[in-house]
Image (cartoon, rainbow, N blue to C red; front, side):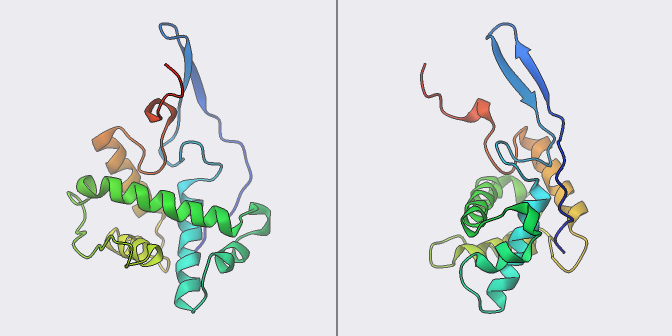
Length: 164
């Protein structure tokens, strides 16, 4: 099930590093750096996309119209989310296989992004027909605890500097 869509501000603690004279923030693990939507909203939308694909639809339009109209999701945004989620899961594969059986994951251009995402979700026990929120939170917490990184997205301190 897609989580209930709520528009509300999420307070983010920001700090100033006196030494480097730069600000930084402490994001809750259920957020994705530089994203406007929570991990639950992104994964819930991808579940809708997978269900649309299973019904024979192509592209991302079916998922974009299946969510709350106030969410302002577009097919392009959902395509970007699929890429970000797959990139995060591929990058984390070595860490995640310590906790989950990922032997059925096939990552290649011929597999297809939707199929690969569905395989990851299945191996990670993230299934749309069950209450998957707690499993997702456990996954995010485990990965973050082991690596001190976000599973999805890249925080500012890990982005390449545009200038020295």
